[in-house]
Image 1 (cartoon, one colour):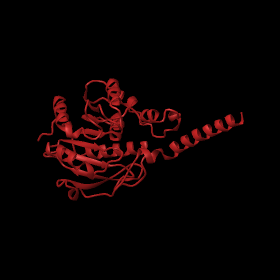
Image 2 (image 1 turned 30 degrees about the horizontal axis):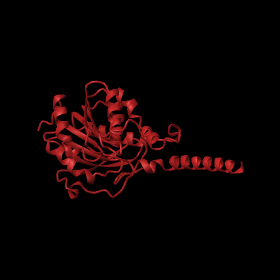
Image 3 (image 1 turned 180 degrees about the vertical axis):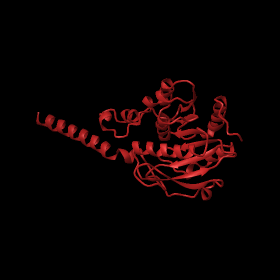
Image 4 (image 1 turned 30 degrees about the vertical axis):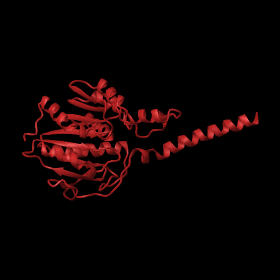
Length: 269
């Protein structure tokens, strides 16, 4: 039976190594900053200007800001884990062209911003950006995509946005990890769980959720879980044939405008 003992030792060793790798590397897996800070006008957002926002814990955040015309309502845009400000320019143009102000945030550790990303850090960043924007506009709509949706939900727990829009959100990072690593005790290993499924029930603002039926990054069922746990007023737009990255191509923003108008939120354009 010596071979059986060796096999058991090998399996236990592999299990421990796999758990240790996940614990050590999880932030590199979850947060994927890349590239360099780019001026919005060079990137193609002609009306934009680069701004710096200070956080309470001493970080300096880079962002793109566009004042609205005449400046009543603005959108705080929170991108996904592997995105940058520069590769969301087309989205920003749709928002600005519909008359809204815009602040697009580069999280700590992402291009142009100081620090290293973590769940508490990104939430601090989001709240600081929200406060900066709310000093300049009477209404702020939070728009979050994927990881940004989790940040947006956390902000909405601490502040009172005019509305919250979630694109391809996950119910929790720990839920994603449990599905990908079912053999590991992820509840004990994940340092940044982003428990959106718990936070959404505490949001006292109109919520619009977009889910994608063919999403291979965040399964569309996550959007349905969040919708079920949200309080009214809420609306779910589930696109059966959509993927994680093509919701904007399927008129996400026009659908968002319809929802905002139904909620009495206008750009005054």
